[in-house]
Image (cartoon, rainbow, N blue to C red; front, top):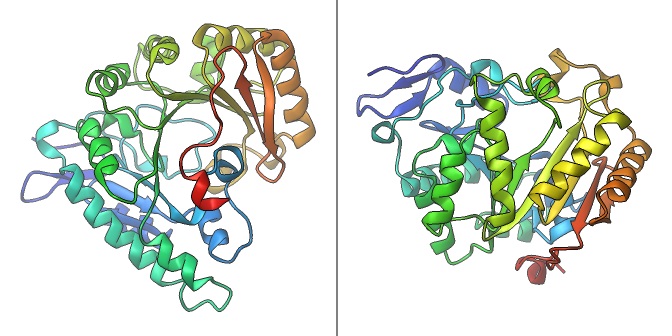
Length: 342
């Protein structure tokens, strides 16, 4: 059996990112292993030099320099989102066969080695805090996102359980586009939910959804809505994350629909963020498609007013993001890593 697009099978029949694609990813400072990828994000590298932290630190207490962002489905995704800044032109395959994927422990061991290699390059920078670099080698937080759609990886429940078995793990975040509701149900049924589950929520109606997400599945809207409907019942922290793009989904006319969506799904938090003109998205969108922070505040304020169940919890001006908290499902914003970062 062969895989299409930019993945191939190695001699042991496991999916591999093609060498040509892997070379381009490594040039872009990704670590690559098999069908998985890892990267040191902008904020992780800044945190090594005490030059700032990711908004997840400000909002939830995540230790930025001890956060490992990776994906077990590096070149697999069901959407081609217009705002995606990842190398999605390499995405082709729509399925990851369980018999052709690496085991979670193998993936994490190899990606950890790749991540260490990336971190080692920062020891030579006199601005780097050596203690932070040392600590970063043992992550306490895992963000399963990066490139590709992680819920396509068929052994995701086993992977999250493995991460939680590690002594240094404090939290696991999972970001999904909602196209694999059966996997979300598996995570619930197998007691393998992450500490916090993010659902990307970029449109309040079908036409906008198709225009922004450019889905490959004919029933993508139904799949996404099924995942949305699960949020209020999942036994974990849940977040809806909206990426606002000028002219696509930022109109005041969309606010009642978004507010209704939030009321129906009742997530613990809603993150409302401007599109950022970075990476590969610059080939599809303009710098002017970003919203200013004042516009994010205004949009968030109207959502709060019309939903009647959320309040503004915090914001990050540098990241152009506002976070709302559900007053009807109150939960402590700080996760367990806060103790080590405060």
